[in-house]
Image (cartoon, rainbow, N blue to C red; front, side, top):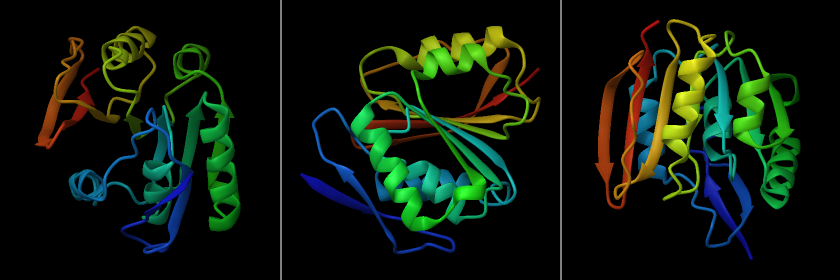
Length: 185
C-alpha cells in the first residue's frame, strides 16, 4: 500500500514522497524533520550529505530541497531503494543525488567519507545498529573534523558514543529519540 510524506521546507516544500508502507519502514515524522533542520538550518545549504539506512528517502529529499549540494543515499531494501529512485525522477535532483543499493555497513567500510558535512543515521529500531555504525565511523578515521551526525532511534534503545564524538543536541519525541553529534577529531 502506497503512503505519502511531504517535504516540509525549501524549494520542493509541499511535494509528496511516495513510499510502500510496511511495518518495518518507519519514516521520520514531520515534527522530527522540523527539529533536525532547525538544528542545522544555517549549515545545510551547499553541504554534502550521506543518508545511511535511507528507507523512504525522506531525510535525503528534505536536505536537497533545503539546498544541500549533494546527497548520497544508501539503502539495502530493494522496494525502498526503487521508491527512492522513482521519487528522485520526479524531483529531478539528478546532478546532486547518488544512490547505492547496498548494506550501509558495507558501504561505509568501503568508501572515503571526508567529503561529507552531515551523515543521517536512521536505521531499523531495536537492532543496535547505531552503536555498530558509530564504531565503524570512529575506527574509519576519515571523517571531516566538522562532520555532524544525526541519529534517530527508539526511546527504548541506547548507544555507545565513541570517544571522538560529542553530543551537541538531543530531543525525545513520543517513542523516538534524536541526537545531533559531532566528530571531534
